[in-house]
Amino acid sequence: MEQVIANGLYLGAQYALIALGLTLIFALMNVLNFAHGQMYVLGGFITYTVYGQLGLPFVVALLASGVTLAVIGALMEKFLFRTVIRRSHREESTMLLAAATAFFFDAVILLLFGEKQRGVPKIVKGVFNDASIIMPYDRMVVGALAIVFIAAFVLYMQYSRVGRAMRALAQDRVAAQLMGVRVDRYSMIGFAMGAMLAGVVGGLLVTITGVNSGIGGPISIKAFLMVMIGGAGVVGGAIAGGFILGMMESVGLTVLREYGDVTYLVIFAALMVFLSVRPNGLMGKPWG
Image 1 (tube, rainbow, N blue to C red):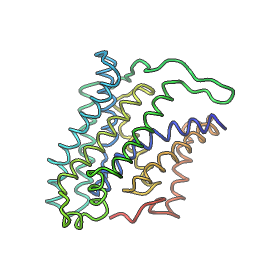
Image 2 (cartoon, rainbow, N blue to C red):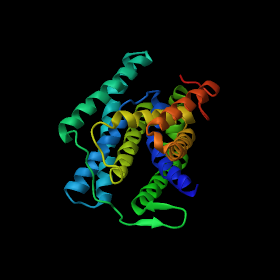
Image 3 (cartoon, helix red, strand yellow):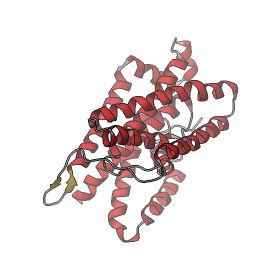
Image 4 (cartoon, helix red, strand yellow):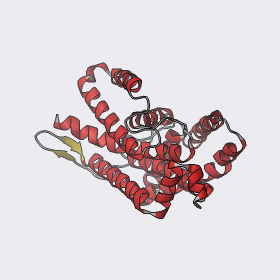
């Protein structure tokens, strides 16, 4: 049981960090960023290039992933999503744009890095082993870093001026604008932060699972699962959804380890039942 809980906490920390970026973008702009998984993949490949190929320190590679994805996110918001939102009053337009950017990033990543699985040297060697828990040290470090990033994000959103402005924008866009909040500026900052979180977690996990050009879609699906469980646009819901999914996956892979992919079949079935009872998730409000 201790091993299952430890695995669930490790998975939950990384999943919550993935979901935070997606739910932040949705809260600020009411946009489901279908390219979120591709941003994760791009962050992983940047860390692979800087840390694995160029041999620079892992911290530098992680910083490069976060900064690069933040810039990409800011440019996407300013030149793509902001333009479509202003010119179209249909939510389907932003969904189609998000899907198009996901396919575009898939093609770019495939052209730049190919389709082979890539990995990097472990950041920490060795395995923690006691009577009940066996966990590689690198997984423990990655899990701890993910929790630190989650805590830093929550504190930043709670106490910083930018965080308060973004929370006001998420609660009532029109009222925030009337109170002097610069909607375009903080929407761009929020989109950049969401993309940065995806890049950072991609950089963290390339040291554990590696990265390839085909995992963007599955990562996006997992992110949507977490948002649906916790409630769209709610930071606490994204964190809760991440840890719930991590625990469900840990329990499922342990109990159903002889049946392979049946684990996610069971998770999807449980999610269908859950959403029929709580269609807005644990903490969410009605969409739109």
